[in-house]
Image: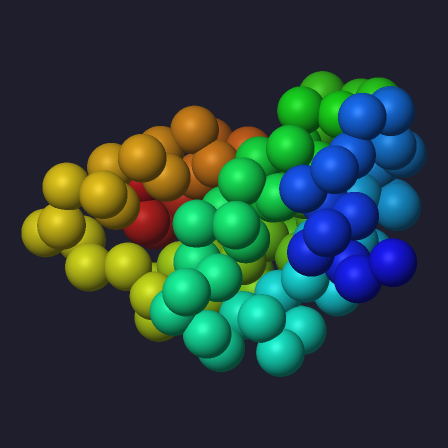
Length: 100
């Protein structure tokens, strides 16, 4: 199954490690370069965050790549960027802390 579809359709608990792997697969996929996929990617990453067994955020590597992707695809002055606040709180790296 495509990583994005897997993230969007996740309905069972996922380990932190598997969540990090899936998030990285989504961010590194061809979908991440298409503006039409942005909302689906955000929902998939949020979904993964909700189903992780631990309360810890994404790994530093995953959160840095997610943060880079967010900076690339969202304008800080755009109201829709505010919708990312919950996802940003899930991120754990120092780089993601700079965005908040």
